[in-house]
Amino acid sequence: MKNHEKELTIRLPENMLQELDVYSHLENKNLNEFIREAVQQILCEKNRCQLHENMRIGYEEMGAINLALAEIGVCIERTLLEEYELRCPEWKEGSC
Image 1 (cartoon, rainbow, N blue to C red):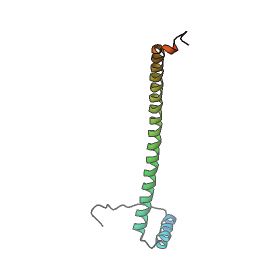
Image 2 (cartoon, helix red, strand yellow; image 1 turned 90 degrees about the vertical axis):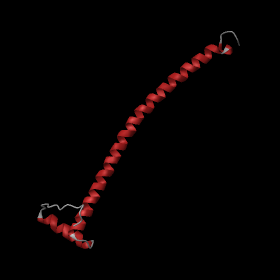
Image 3 (tube, rainbow, N blue to C red; image 1 turned 60 degrees about the vertical axis):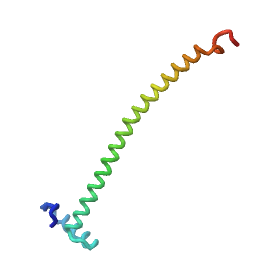
């Protein structure tokens, strides 16, 4: 056993252990290797799901921020347009 590995004892129903034995033999692996790889796959899937959830939350947060920025931009553009219209002589009444 490598230094960075810890030993783990688990209890499994006999039928589950028999099924693990069958699949480990089909893949030419010992039970320890097979279970380690199965646990690794479970952890990868959980990490992938957590990443997707974090991304979903991030996109929702960015959506709210982008909406707020767009609203600010519209307000600024409207103010600038109003100021331009006030200063532009061709927009004044009777100048056509």
